Image (cartoon, rainbow, N blue to C red; front, side):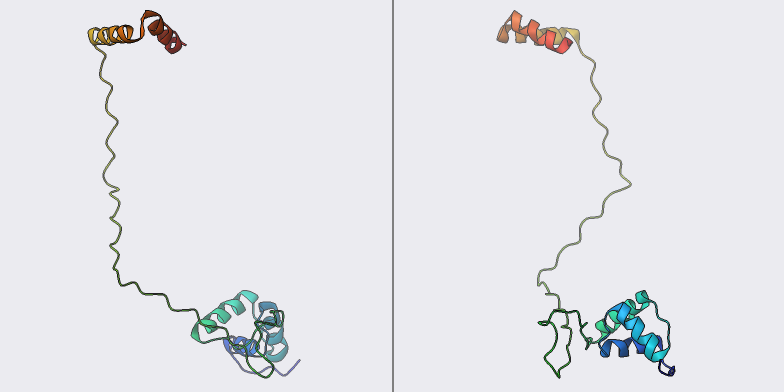
Length: 142
């Protein structure tokens, strides 16, 4: 183990990534061995993400496919994400939901007028016949 150096954990993580220890477990081991600092893998990942947003990370893990690694003697650089396309059309915001307004209640069932009901049944008898209407009533009756 090397002699501990006075360095911040974030700087140690940056140096570990530049040295090729880009995976959290590799980076934590590298930092412990070279700087004598204890760093959690979650913290390593968080700082690595922050560094990636600031500028491209120069190292690629050794387990990465050969197509992703840089040629010998060159540093691998992670590409920056493409900027989002700007739309020339402005979208209108969706209307706010009216949570304070209660939905309309279902219409109340009107009481049945027996005379009007008898007229409707007579219309069915005229249209379909007595036996068909009796059959309909038996089906409804259960």
